[in-house]
Image 1 (cartoon, rainbow, N blue to C red):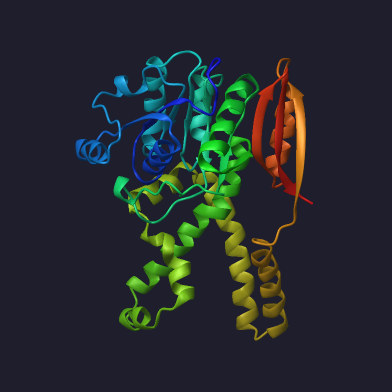
Image 2 (cartoon, rainbow, N blue to C red):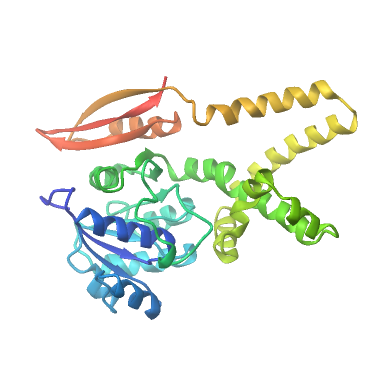
Length: 336
């Protein structure tokens, strides 16, 4: 991004569905020079009707940009990445918002793009889709994973600053491999379980009765089953190995619950649900402590990268990243 301040970058958003559209709207509100592009002409027309800059040609969108967000469907990301890097300057930072990171990170490494591409994943969304569903406040206080690399640490710093300042999000540095393992259990398996529960009701002879009596537990447990089916399928297929591995862990717990119920073992049921309740209760109640950590701007960056990855693995996040006087200063929080 050169000498331009990270707080006022020139940005392109490629793909303006729910996530890309929300990024675009927020950057527009923030006052950034931002352009949007989508392969579907009606979406571009919708963007223009909102007063947004929506050129028809992708090359015109990414030209002279400091940051480019790739927000199209997962299967399109590798090809789009290659197309975009051909049309931007060497100092442009490119990132994505895909819900799996291993595949696109490996693709970038194979094509020598790790010094320009920072894999990313904002942990926010709804079951709705499209620019009309976009919400500029979608990422406020959300976790936003970024996957730094040794030769892309400068790009990581610049992007982390934009995400904190523009979106009010919490940046979680994490390796692509760890990200995929974590989201398999925190996001992808819940999609499988929601689909399983809703699918069982769809084929049940008491379907209408269930729908008539459905309360919060059913609505909460099946909410993500309302996500567009292709989006969910792409997510699961692209993280197949980790999803199946974590699903085995969930299946083991379910088998234990079923065995306790079958054996009329009340104590075992209570014990397992107390354990589960402790995890659920900890979700909003984690005790976090603030920190500040500085590193030299130059050098090998190995210590900085190791610290960042350890921070994310430990459940911490960044709330600031400032470069000046030969130092990069990170602020944030981590579990006590």
